[in-house]
Amino acid sequence: MPHSDADDSDDSALFRAAIGPVKPLPDAPVSPLRKPAPRPAARMAERDEQDARGEFQRLLESDGPLLEAGDSLRYRRSAVPARIWQRLRRGQFSVQDELDLHGATAAQAETMLRQFLAEAVQAGFGCVRIIHGKGRSGGGPAPVLKNLIDRMLRQRRDVLAFHSAPHAQGGTGAVLVLLTGS
Image 1: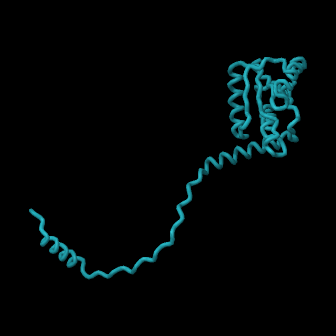
Image 2: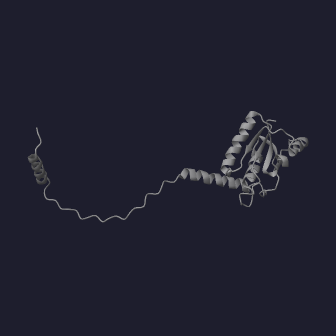
């Protein structure tokens, strides 16, 4: 059936008759401009970062005073013969792999070090070098990466001994690590 203008007016009249009298609503107050909602925070990532910082802080606070920039890293298990220890101190072992941690945060360095050592042991490497830097650019009271590496290496079962590298191999900015694979 074709639609006509007469039908439209009948429909409007029919609608008004059906709903009855209406009362207009008062004008709504103009709302002030709202600030955009804040972006959601990544609470789990923030909590993980706090936990990592807390674990790192506990690691640094354990086992005595912190090392200074010029201090040598040194550790050996009692099972390591003195002759082997002397060779490590002199840098007479062939370095089979190397990890450079320059520019890494403490959390990044910890992850990188764990992975590097696991891969080195799995590959059967006997001696590796870890470059941590001297820690003078951080501006803090102690070199963060150097102390982190010292604490972490002491806790690992696969580390037999470690010593700061001889001057020609990085000096106190690097450490030679003797692993159980040797």
